[in-house]
Length: 96
Image (cartoon, rainbow, N blue to C red; front, side, top):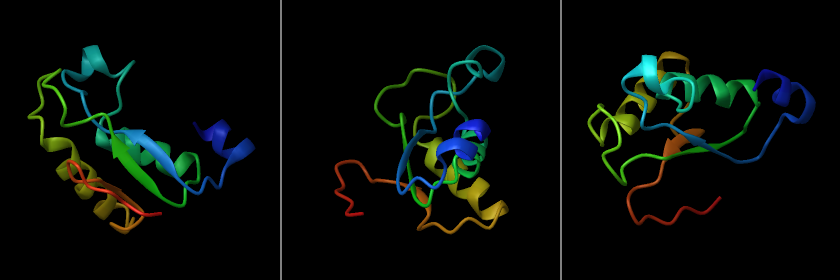
């Protein structure tokens, strides 16, 4: 993702997966945990991101509503404002 950011970076909007990540030893090659998603956000130099791929089905071991909470915690740790990377509520319309 860092190479993508270097070559094409500065994306206005990115949809980045945040869910279906446990157990990590099995899922990490194919799914992003929120911590990974924040790194992707930074690496691609996105101005705004919306987390996706969570809350629809129970696919893995994490509680289905945990990914948005974990995303908010990871963003807070790194000083990324809520307005830069967050999720839509179920059925919510977001204007960008």
